[in-house]
Length: 557
Ligand code: C2O
Ligand code: CU
Image 1 (cartoon, rainbow, N blue to C red):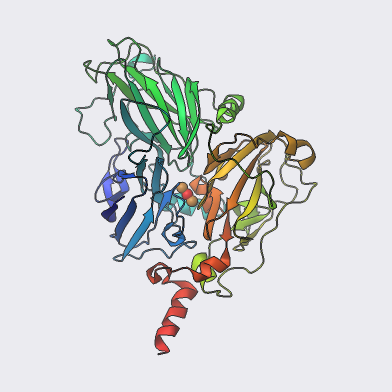
Image 2: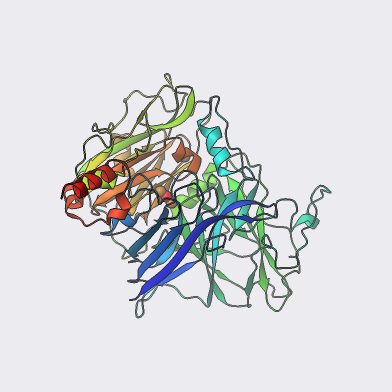
């Protein structure tokens, strides 16, 4: 195992992700940020310099559990203070599990501004992955707006509320086409021009060159701010083998749903007519789509990459065909031999997801509390047992039994809070995520929930309100998949189990960035005593009450 030293500078830059120029967050001048490739057991050391003129920054390593290094999790107000303009902060952490991951900004809406990139952890030498392939490609999927993230943010907190709307473009490895289509010639519309590329444009599609009769691994990850996506390849089946850095029982699909925060590996075999090229298409699911598909080409060599496929791009399933999505999600099961969940839980927390109102603002609430992050990072407050850094009272463990999840809330008013759930070390915790109707009649949305610091087992999905009497016996304790992100479907519930074995302060939240910004998350404190004994670099904590405490200590001797 080695240590991989990286020096990064974060800055804004003019860039044309979808052929329209705008301000984009870049790392070392690149968008998306550089791909990190490492081997299991390696230590990653990123010396990050904030070159932004007027904002702080942090970077979260999504899917890396940060065993023993909670201070390197990169969540502003939770694991560290934002790094100020001109300052340097060094993230140092171990990658202990092979898989497909990514990293992204976790302060304000910096992910929407383009602060993300891929993190690939390869199996160690002598370690075998349970499948074979001849080559691999990495596709990081995202969505893109022409309005700046700052203006989006302003709209979300304004009264009246201004929603960010649907993205202008979907991007594959940071590349999309807004004002033209690669597939224009297949559509009987004169409104869309055919895209013309010389090949070196920032928005030129990321082509996948392949040879016939080989097997390729596609690593897919979604860092979208909002969109739930579906990916399909014309004429080719995909065999799903990995989800969120965990191996799954292989299964074949024609198309695959991927929600923000998720990652997959799929295998494809290039067994189609080698004289043709084939479309790779990515479209929006779960919201009435207003965004064109992202397209690129599976290019059978030696055909020219610009040879258009013989048939039109695969169509994305209807946005509200939730049965299609559910049938995909429930096919994902752990590979035989994977760790199994404890048979029982020590504690079960119910989290009701509702849309709500606070002083005229539109919010998302969990058990009727909308998360508002405090200026002192929770991790520092726990370490030094600082009172007043966040609300002392824990949020509720459940919601009123008679709450009607099928209709708009009878009382939409919520409170805003910073309280946390305290979990005893090594306890088995169930979380039942319960979806409900939003503030609009007959509306319930998809929310992909992501846990920091741990993977969880997805024990099951169901419709309506979860009841232990009916639903406990339907939970899968035999081969549930381990993941770090799981979706709740409209009007449904999702049951998760995990062992709280990693001391720290961990975010658990909807991965839709504007939803998190509107309060859709909770904070879990695991093993507070162990945190107290932990060494935490003081540079992580030089803000809020921890900064005051450090200043007082220094003055004292
Ligand atoms: Cu990728 Cu807290 O998120
Ligand atoms: Cu959400």
